[in-house]
Image: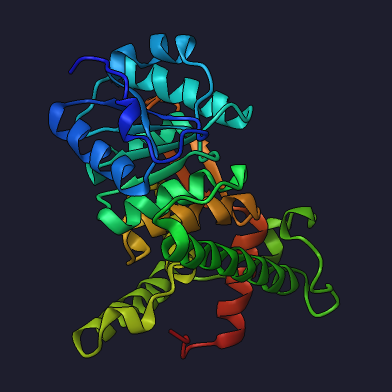
Length: 310
């Protein structure tokens, strides 16, 4: 897979900065090239993952970097992702990392839940939308993004509003009825252990099981609620004193992995969840409830009583 420059005669937007592609195989490269071609953007170059940092050092204006990963490349992959995380945070370019579900933990550990757009086992529409979302800060819409980006931007706006609403509700639950809806959850004082209502893991497991049983009789899409599913999964793990890696929490969300990861990032940014690096494995991150979130959930179950709402 050799580096090559795009054919200037094929350019659709000559004034657009190009996209750099880094891939782990020829098949991965082909997938990435199809996505960039569909958006009408031009490709600056294609490189292997281990050569991507050298190319970034030489590359001038770059709209985005698209990294297509279908196998674990170890150190070179980790180093590239860390570099991309830093560059995106600094506003140098946008980035999309396309991976398979098996690679979620090592990839997410290097990105640290930052502003890099990560997609998992995504189809063509999701891939185009991800690039539109990642580059939206440049305010330069993509050719095929008229529908896809608008819909996804609206979904992301709704996601942010919904998580903000959840944070406000949990904040009120964690401190009682005197807390105002505008109080951010992460600003609340830590709760003393003795103030936390008792709750058994069996109770939470029964609620989770009841939610899953609905899929036997109705379409699962009717009840998609990734925020609540992740809250319950982390609560159950906390009571059982278990650690939950990012990949497991995305599975518990019961929605496509890319959607689950976006929810997870938003919940972390709102202070509902906390990311903890695995002290024994630098390529894995655990997620847990923030103390105030845990307290709010326990108060919820205490108020609901023996007949837990699903």
